[in-house]
Length: 587
Image (cartoon, rainbow, N blue to C red; front, top):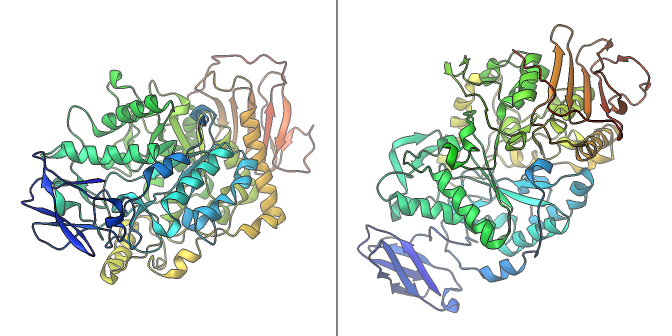
């Protein structure tokens, strides 16, 4: 097989195995190549540049001995043969996404163990899994955002073939699989890219280290390296899409942004394979250009996270007003998020001390992903508390209804559906003690603006990781089973909304002083009493049938909604759903 590596400034490159050194040939374009039979590579290989210490392959497909170990080839055709022919995942307009961390989803922390819980996800109504990053990073466990071998899945979770089998099993259950990928920086330990070529730039920096060189000298091949990686996950492993981490830190100032180029390459691959892939961006810019087409001056991604929804909900229900929550003030922000997706559309942000965002003109509801919880918003708290550790069951039910019945693409974080009581902490397993110390100190400094009291859990402590694993035995407890049933019924209601996606907007009425909200979308009407006392919430005109209520013993004909209560109505099947109804735009 032919092995190639890009090292444009090298005078010589050798392929090194435990038993031989092979001089590679330059092709004149910065690449060095050699042709070897697979058996000669069975013990792994590295590259030596100009006679230096051998280093792992930047495009290594398998690092069983960690980020500093030998690189290994894999049978890519064997992975592709596991792909289920004819599988079609649901479109985002019909999606309910479930974010999952393989290392904490089960006690065993493997693909195989996660696969055993697929029936739970199917019965819940999940259409897409979103796996947190899998690129090999230092140590045995971590969130994955410090990956350094972008082409090699982490050995701790299983082999490449086991990953492909897991994806195939998901497809067999009708579930699509998305992968969280990190193209804005690499981790510090085991990051050898700069030894090979100009992969990084010192003109700009990210909050996590050197920025990737997307527009300087040599950036054509850097872009190719990243885009090829995106295509690999989709083509070889069978993923249905990618979630792109923190794209606001992918600095690209050329006429064609790296995101636009990636989107075009992914579309081309989809056409060749007769599949529909999605790219979903994480961004805190409130920038509609992410999902606008290139013809409209955009990047052509399918969707992006809309964090304002989370921030408004969290601020209102928890009362926390530190950090970025200081920009959100009450029920009016939840209403605006439900109507528009963005709360900040160009107005001044006190937290940022500048104007923030722009109006989401031309952005469809299914181009925004919203959530009440995710790995960041839980794990970036001092003690990794979930909302279920801070709020009542009635409040959790209200939040679930706001999220799952919104016009947008809803996403849940593992365990949210039953109100899991285990934290999700920030954990690492850096093998370099000094790096571990610096990470712990840096984390404490990064979140000092939230003014949390007490000492942060040490990310390097084994207990920090173990405490973050889901406790599946909670499902046998009545209070957790009740919340799980509520989520199942909401998702079922979402899937059965008549004409549910004809309008990208929702109708919202609210009274901030009285603490109630009325939310109507696509044949479903939700009434919320957020006050501590029972009260009447006005019912929208029309024929409505009660579908769900948060208090099981509540009488169906009662006019008053209990304290912190939620009542969901739907139009009878024969009722006419009016399209293009007017929208109250909250101030």
